[in-house]
Length: 297
Image (cartoon, rainbow, N blue to C red):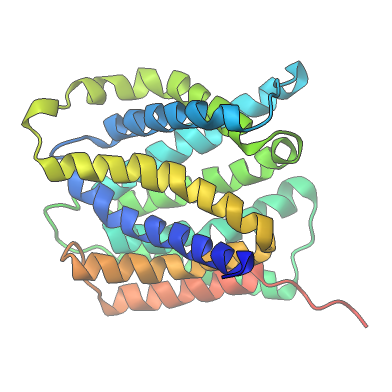
């Protein structure tokens, strides 16, 4: 099989893991691990794994002038982003999270226009509007009475915060990605993530009853640390060596599909007409906002 086909499988694998993660992480919280405690486990585990594989990459030092940008990236991508997502997942449902997290490309378009002066075309404008309407529909009308989802509107709002934070991270980290090897960048980002998350997440982490948890909970934690945090990154990096960034980015459209299928199959969530309508609006909005305009003749 060609490297391109392996790259496509890697991109699909990363998207599948992301889709499954919404249900797997939800099943653990908050009974066995509270959201903020989960974040500390995740950043510690990821930092350890990236430090272990770092010798296989080039030896690079972060230049002094880049540390401020690196710290900002860690705050956006490893603190605000993760805290908002996991807390939102505790309060809301796996299907809501798998849908709302896909609005990140729309957020990137808006932030790029605001901070980088990039032009918003008619297609992008319509896409932003539809994505916003879809997200607002889920926030205002997608709530149902569920014991495992105590505050769906707030949870859905936190998913939006997560997308905004991650979108800003993607813009800020771009210059660092062009300059440093991924292993070097990730080991420092997750190390800084430990430092910044520690004061917020340590109390929840210390409450974890490690010796009384069922075996499947350990499996879920390993899936989030190794699968969602570590393998997905490596899969996407490999995919980017053979495919265009826009092609790899297009796989985000599959995430709600995998997330919804797994959530329904595991009995962790259910579909409703509102969720279906909101999903269609969000995905159509993301498609239009991400679509490259045809070059002028």
